[in-house]
Length: 455
Image 1: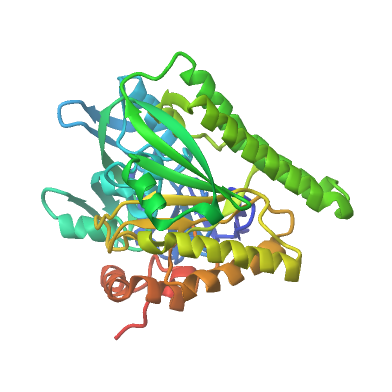
Image 2 (image 1 turned 135 degrees about the horizontal axis):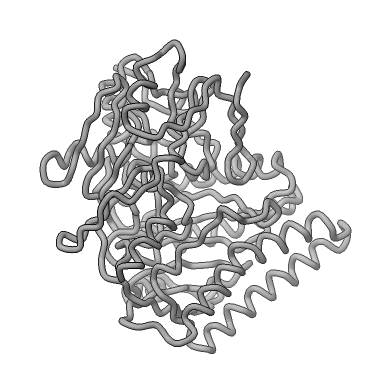
C-alpha cells in the first residue's frame, strides 16, 4: 500500500510505493543499492515545503527527518557541520546558543540544510554579499545513485561543488553539509513607501546602492522598500518586534486574506479586500514614520512547522535583470489588473520582490549574469484551479520578458522556460545529471520533462 505524502501548503500529493526514514548513511546506501525493495525514482525529501514536485516520486521517497543532528561547530574556521535533515531554524538555535549565526538567515526556517545545500534558495535581507543560502556552503557529503559515499568542498573540488549546489538531489542524496557562519549581529529594518507611478530608475538604483539588503513589497500600486542595515546590538524591543513580525507574516496576513474570500459575500468581497490592502499599506507607512525596527538578525527566520493550514500561503518566483525590474513591475501590475477584469482572480497578498546580487557559486545561479530583482506573486489560495491558471498566465508573462525561474519555487514550469532562462548552463547541467546517474535512479517525471534532450 502506498504512503500518501502532502507538501506544506497541500498543493502537491505523492504516493510512493516505498517511504523510508533512514537513521544513518549506511541505510541510505542500502536503499539506493536495493532496486527491488526501493524502486526508482528515489527522491530525498526534506520538509516538503517546495512548491514544485521536485522531491516527489511514485517509486521511493527518502525522508531525511531522522538525520537531524549538528555534527560540529568550528569556531576557529567559522564552519557549522550538520546532518542534511536538520531544519534551518533548529541549526540556527544551536548557533545562537554560542553567539553565532548563519551568514544568510533565510526566512523559511523549516527548509532543511540538505535542501539549502543543493536547491534554489533566496533571502534578500542578508544579501550583503550573496542572497542565495547555498552560496555559503563550504562542503557536502552525499550518497551517489550507485550507493557510494562521495564528498566535495571549496578547497579540493570547487567545480564539482558548484554543480552539486544545483543538483536538486539528481546526483544522489545529500547526507552532511558544512556552511560558513559568523558572530551573531543585529539588523535595522527600515521601510520606504513610494507610489509606483512616481518611481524612476535612478531612484530605485539609489535605494539599492544604499542598502545592505533589500526586499520590496508592492501593495496595489504602492511599493514599500524594506531595507536592512547591520548593527552590533538591536534595541530593547528587538525580541518583541520579531515576534510581532512573525505573527503578522506567519499567520495574520494569509489568514485574513483567505477568510475574506471564503466568508465575505461575493458582492462585498472586493471592498473587503481593498480595505485589507489599505490596512497593510497603513502599517508600512506607520513603520516608516517610526523609523523602522531593530531585531536580532537570526530572528528573521520564521518557523512555519506549526502554522495552521488556513494561514499558509503559496507563491512563485521569477527574477529579472536589475535594470529591467521597474519596467517589468509596472507591466506586471497592468497584467494583474487586466487578468482580474477578465477572470475575476487576483492575488490576495502583497507582491514580493527580492533583490539578489550577482553570484556564480552555483551552476544554476539565477544571478550568475548580474544583479537581479524578482517578481513574486503571493497568494492564500481557496481555489487551486484558479491559482494554477493564474500561474500559467504569469509564467508566460515572465517568460516573454526574459525572466529566470527557480526549480523548486516556480510552479508549472516547462522545458522552454528553463532552457531560455539558463541557456547553455541548462545543457551543461542536464549532461552532468545524466553522467552522474546514467540509469535514472534519481530522475522523477518532473525533472525528466525539464532536462534538455540528450545529444
